[in-house]
Length: 239
Image (tube, rainbow, N blue to C red):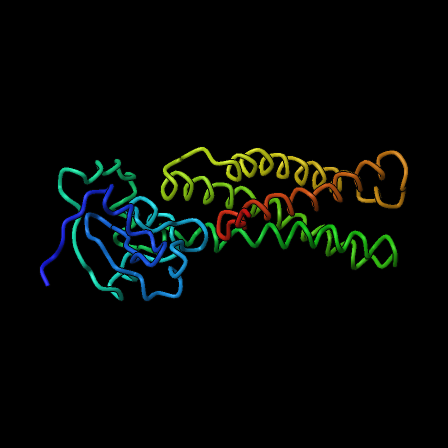
């Protein structure tokens, strides 16, 4: 069967609705993904939709275009209707040599500050209710770990956003960009304060109260950043 040629408007009709096939395009090639369980509703992960050219979207996926080879290629986009390819990052040669660097650095590093910051809050709470100094020491070490890893994660996150999402403004990204520096500043202030005043937790008034306020404020900030990061990976389906 010879390849068909479709315009983007014609491709949009292959959306899986009312019994229609589920087609997607990548770099001018059209694939039939009707048999894929991940595309059976006409959408994939609630963020990618059939009947569209997903060339740009592929850059933000946790996998490469090789997954499309599992499905039959049924045609091509008419040359005159292929959208202009957006300028690629200057890091493209590096990504070709080490593809893992395109998508993986941020997911690989983002868990460290989340765990460290929440652990600092948790062990501080344990110290307050038990008085065991080992919990206090553990909280301090976790806080230091969070301060060290947060700038690294901010850098990998910014790189992933500019490379895989082309720097497009998105609400979840905007929240993460706004809250992450605040969390870093609060955690750094708490760490410096703790180092300069080792006995600050022996006084639960004044300086001690402010220190605890800084520490416990990390929890909602971490949860807010994590929530919006999860929404990027697993968007919430609207009714």
